[in-house]
Length: 135
Image 1: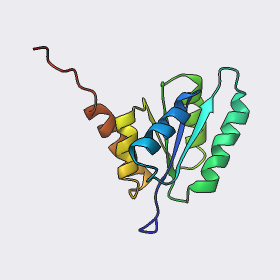
Image 2 (image 1 turned 90 degrees about the vertical axis):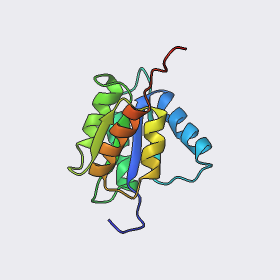
Image 3 (image 1 turned 135 degrees about the horizontal axis):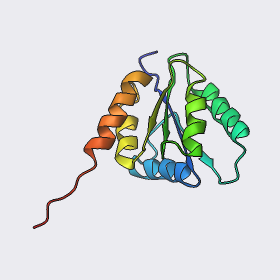
Image 4 (image 1 turned 120 degrees about the vertical axis):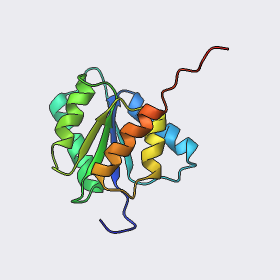
């Protein structure tokens, strides 16, 4: 990867969640992010068309180093689509269970390759889940 290149990140989630994550990230980071795309999966979406759309989106942005694909709920239709999209390049990585802190974290470390970024995503998502102690 060229030093200034950013790893592409594709969010695939139940509609309108993917778009909402992209909008929230843009709001939090004042639009200072690159290579972030989203694919909302509607309840009546054609799975094959959605897979093709996701692969096409990544081909426009990702290089041979791969991309990070984030999805919401493991085992649901968007997750199954995301798995197939991620499998389109052996360097792509898939992480399920997206949350906003995870997304902001990976956007701050986008200079990392997809494999490293997947670990950063998991760590960022987990460390943001806190149960505050009652007073």
